Amino acid sequence: MRGLIKAFTLGKFDIYKIPLNTLAIGNHTFDYVLDTEYFKKIDGQEVQKGKVMAKVLVNNTGLSFELNFQLEGIVQVPCDRCLDDMDLPINHKSRLIAKFGEAYAEEGDDIIIIPESEGEINIAWFLYEFIALSIPIKHIHAPGKCNKLMSSKLKKHLTKGPDDEDEDTEIEFEDSEPLVDFEEPDLQQTDPRWDELKKIIDNN
Image (cartoon, rainbow, N blue to C red; front, side, top):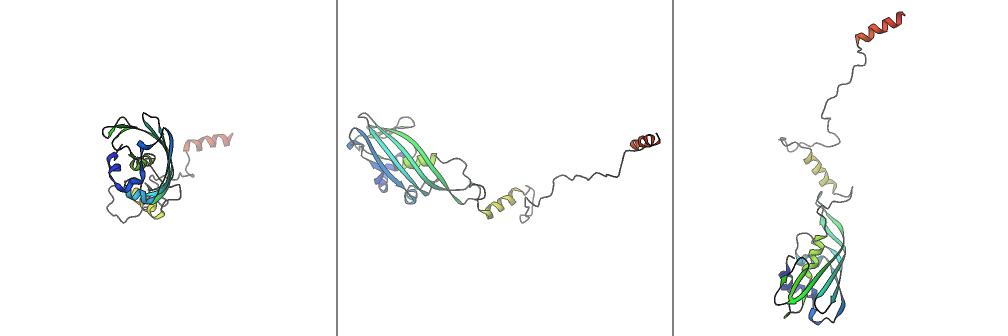
């Protein structure tokens, strides 16, 4: 869980604090809108624009707090092919268990210890991590949606050989010549053995 301390120490994320020590036993719901301003403040590498609706259901069991996250919306990420921004839908669910203790700590992938003296958890960075984890490794525009100029330059780059010295040489996929020269067969040329056989058949 990267950035655990970071999320707690930045005052600009105070609205994402959940006062666990004042929650009654049972379920409690918290709603957030994660817009472009939020992503700019987080300053993460994966996402810097978007609008995601976040619903957090917190269940106080008396011994621990179970936080269930539901994220749904759109984020903008650069296309791997043309580098233009593209909309990427987000629909993600995650769970986190929080317990009171003496100091901040992590127990496994989804269990954290919160200082009982503070009695609250700041979920700003967790929300961002859940969004970042839901982004696929490869994200490419739908066919025909890429920036045509960038796609054309990429094609020209990929069709150049490693030993090409002239960087201005442009090779288009559509105009490329066949790699192998096939000679047209000479339809007038025949096997002389067939000529002799044909003579025998004609004389009979």
